[in-house]
Length: 638
Image (cartoon, rainbow, N blue to C red; front, side):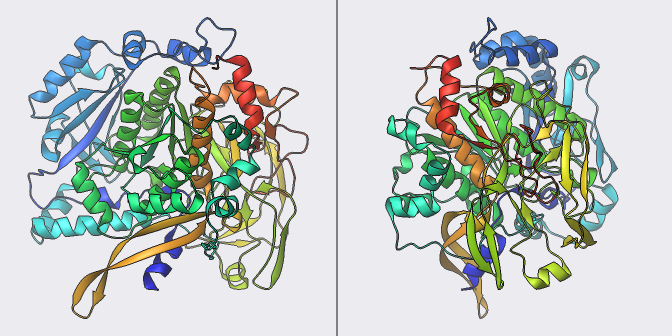
């Protein structure tokens, strides 16, 4: 029962990783832990790259659907081979390995922590900043150095006098578990699915058929499109168990061949990653499992490539590991669609762990990387978040990184339901933006809680992209000040909330939305063993848990699965969705169901009557039958 309670109490829909894993100083002066850093490079012609990205999805352009291979991208937009060679030669002098990702837009740097710091002349400035230096001939083409950091030398000396390497290793594992549960809430319904149901009956109530029925994906299944010939890339933070996924597949009645699951450990050895991932139940393990189950069941004939960014030594920053996973997936160029439900931090200084790359630099590097993906025809999906515009539980609004315009940011909705919760009748008559204050207990309403809701708002790092310009509703908003921050990460509901309308600027998000409310959510299965103290001994106790969960990290991999289903009927990749879908939304036969209801609230933003775009839900929910027809009417299909 204890294991069951633990899982229900920590299941998250969207995970922002904490920095505690990587903030530890090594006990010895020479830090021989392996680390991964990245050097993001300028493209040869950045404006030309951006224009090319848009041209690939413009039917009026000569470059329409002329997607590049990574080697073609390197020739057209990457740094020269001679420059990359010079960088490698420089780092080799410090016994540091450098390898360019395919495309020549970034260099992966691996070595011991001490050697990497020496190579970059890293110096501790303060808790938020590490300075670095590179030779002038190399530094001129650098956008950002990601993941280089040095501990406070005074603090390191104090720790070194007290701790041994063995103790430090134990501490890192503890910090790993702590980092995975920071900034995490509980998007679960508190109920279990009815496992007496199986196959299609279970799937319609809790699984992929529920998603497919709601969003008209079934017509594509009826055409024989199930993701065959496709690969879906998932960027995650930890490993998962095949047994969990297979059990889920059996319950929902889809293809149970685990041979379609592939792991790529990008920041550490697979054996070490798996061992650390499975050493203790943790949030990221649940998140990874539900990502795999969601994507693979919506596209039951697609292969799943899981890019695991966990670095077991504890010496790699989450920001660098996350970037590494994306860059590896994009340079591999095997996946027509990539999805993630993880974020390395927030668009706020106090939510950022990288010491050598500030938020502006990291954002620039991430945008360039995703432009390479778009130029190659890869569609990227990212979970928008699970607390409206409050990624962090604080008075000020803040967004999770990344809000890049070169990806599809996914928001959440609530499906119609009627239920008595805490002796109160809850009735949702039509699909609406997810903003759940209505199922809170009287104690929560009085003392405070951190409610769940679909993401939405305006990026503080990225300007309004060209595909959003002029779309009715973009850069205007209607909101209700529903919540009042009372401190200690808790909100209460305002008794007399104000309606606010106005104008704002920046990349508006989300782009699209789908069911993410745990009250109308999906089933997840996870099993394993958990270390438990029994007397004086610690034994591993098995657990097998079914829960009904929610969050944008359910609907985001489902969107990637739907993309794979559509791509399985085509001879060319769909490519960069956003310029296409914003154009489709303005046509008479739009594939989107706009959620413009003023009572539809994602904890702050509402719908805007008469507008096509709303910060609570983006363009709305998708009719995939219509969307597929729209893509095919403009592109080359089989």
